[in-house]
Length: 153
Image (cartoon, rainbow, N blue to C red; front, side, top):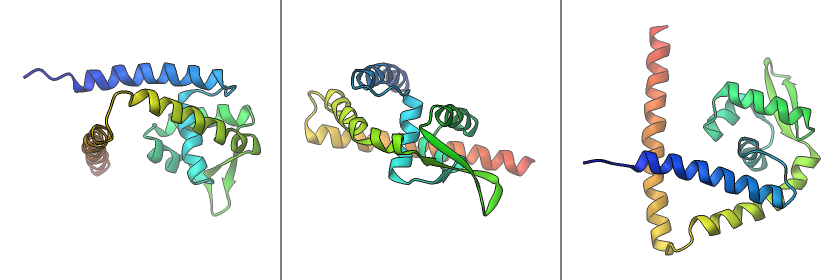
């Protein structure tokens, strides 16, 4: 049986990113999707390490580091050395980043309304539970790979 789930997810992701970035720009929020994911995580729990942000966003550590550096340069985030572990950086929100949260959440709600247009609440629930299962499977597979790779080192 031919399946197209992964293909559909990729297409949805591409379209969703473009539409979401357009909605953000229309609301005066000049950030990219990757920056938005990092902000979203920090709005929930400020003062995180690069590794913690990576795990919570599913972005690679090097990607998080590069994006965070750009956000620091734009005055969106702060990056400071962890006093308990000088090899680690702690990333935190600036006042400017905090000021974006309300408008970002409004745009996010607009995107959710568009995303689930025509879905019943039951369909939304089923869809999200199925996606969560796929995410759990892929996360487990990635962790197994990392553990195997570390065991070989």
